[in-house]
Length: 187
Image (cartoon, rainbow, N blue to C red; front, side):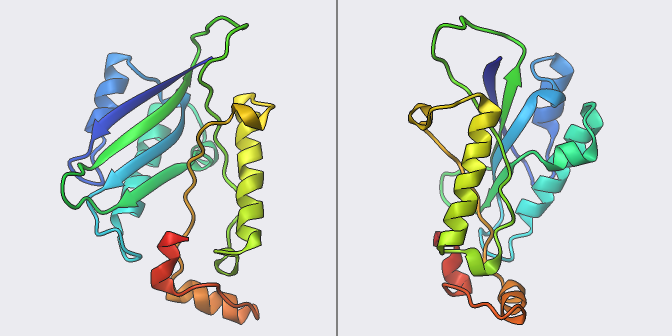
């Protein structure tokens, strides 16, 4: 297997024209996409709907263009960050594993993807969050065929933000949260 990354600009959170052009040209195959990282034009706050809109749009497009089930598409990690102030351009990066191969005796780039166990509001900023993320990294290592943690050189994670509703849910379970809603994006 080899790794490929393709980047497209986004005219809006619902823009899949770059994806559709790459699929139509044969440059990529929908079933090879293992992860998505993108930046939307939203405000970057807890109320930024552009991330959810982009996520739903890309999941629908990948489902329609490939042979994977909705559940398999739901298992693809998609990290969407909102807010494009200044010189940042809204964009998306598709990470794929292709059928191409290289020399088996040489180290090369590998990619693994996994979703962690749900991170609850009361986990954010606490050891439970670290444990869940670490388990997710171990699952991504297995997905990539990496056995030695020394061979891991980059990990991308995305954790949920606290919301007032999430804080209320935690309190209803008799739990507390470790930080304020507006501070959770930095945790």
